[in-house]
Image (cartoon, rainbow, N blue to C red; front, side):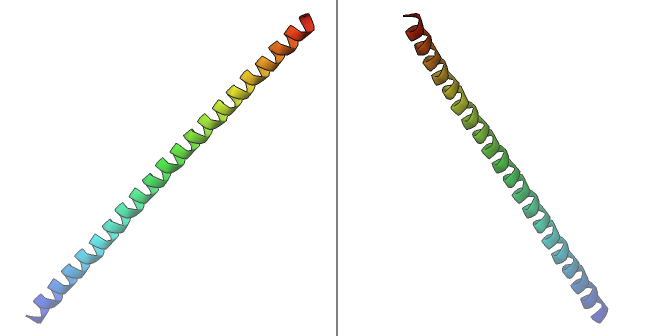
Length: 74
């Protein structure tokens, strides 16, 4: 009877430990995936903002050059 109780306790403890490890593993994996997704989204947003900024900067530069050319022609 004592052996049954000890075996049962061991099995339950092992299950609890395994469950805890699995829970931590999935939590860590989810956290890592969420962090990666957030980083990728932030990088994409930064790249888009950078491209947008330089596109408009270049467009404004072109307008200035056109205005300068028009003034020099006239």
